[in-house]
Amino acid sequence: MNDSKTTVSEIKEFIRDFCTKRNWKMRVLNTAISVNLEAAELLEIFQWCDKSEAEKIARETDREHFVEELADVMIYCTQLAIACDVDIASAIEDKMRKNALKYPLD
Image (cartoon, rainbow, N blue to C red; front, side, top):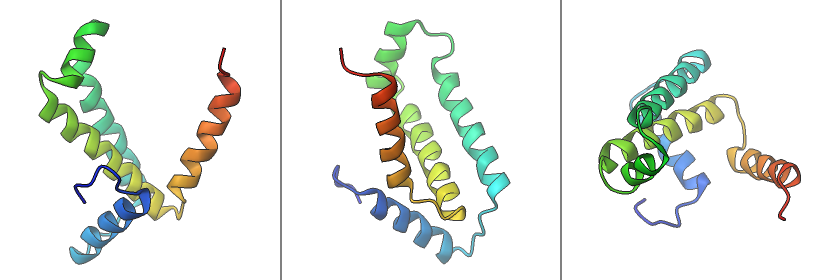
């Protein structure tokens, strides 16, 4: 799963398999809270930065911490989608279509 072309389905199956092997039961509320907590940690990395500093940190300075927090957010969001039986790829596509209407090209 190190390929940059990993699909959402592959990520979803990897997470589902990981949790199943450990007999972890994802509860919707706990998972939603975890998304919030991990996103807050991600924000904490940047909260005192100006825009250019935040860009630099995301690219290089504290990249390992940034990438871990970003992955945590994605893992919990995917678990939430699994728990709620949501096709996350379709949900993202639908949202991007709405965003394209809301923010059309100039």
